[in-house]
Amino acid sequence: MIGKYHSQITTEALNSSFNDNALNYIEKGNLDSDKLRRKIPDITDGFDLSAQHFNKASLEKCDDFLEKAQSVVIDDFIQAAKAKGEDADEYYEQAFYDLGRLVHNIQDFYSHSNWVNLNQDEIWNEDIKNPNINGENKLKTGEYSYFSQFIDKINPFYKWFAAKNYENMYEGTSTVSHYGLNKDEPNTIADRIYKEKYGTSAFDLAEDFATIHTEQKWEEINSALREELTTTEYNNLRREIANFDLSEDDFNNNLQDLRKNFNEDMKEA
Image (cartoon, rainbow, N blue to C red; front, side):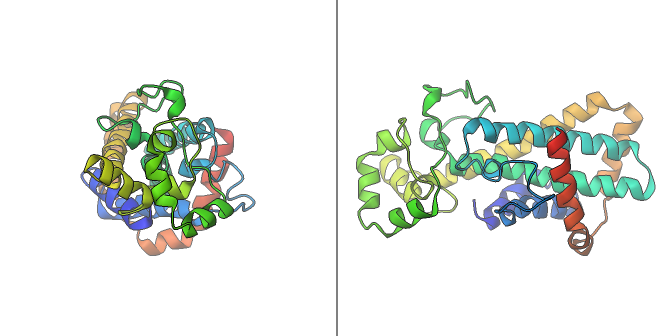
């Protein structure tokens, strides 16, 4: 999804759990995923660049990114809960940034895969081998290359072709380009075809699923933290989250370290 929708989804899903400063860190971590589209030593070599967007890479690599990122976020919050003073601030900064990177991945799953086309009723269970749809081998992301993007975009007959071959392209096992599959914003090719076929917006469904999944992901992480920490540590964690007061300037000043730490932690996860 494009940035403003990532921000809207993240705010709607998490604003009841985090104060404005923490939410700002999470949103900026989320949006930073889209700024890291090329290999940068010590910044992006700990993970597959396409996998962080559920795009181009194999579904297994995308799922591996999700699992590792979640373990990194849980470890961040555990360390934050056990730390004191300025060290705690650094751990909370990292935890919020990393949470943003994690939920970006979840949100892109719905806009960059054919999940909506295969399932209008429930969110993904995060099992690539058995993803609670009929015919799991039909779940796919869009094939991405600059060439395919360019050719499909300039082809005046592409929408007609995609609509005519809907079952094979969107609900079958044939390949489809990222341009033809993405629901990153309203009125993409995929959104218009879906709306004509079913009378509802594929983008709206992807956005709704992404919002629910983002909220549930934090609930899952929060439950894990409640189990891992002592009552005192967990209560301290909740108090510090509620009182987090670092600003946007702090985020910008520390961004390179946040990126490097996420990359290093993903290597070790």
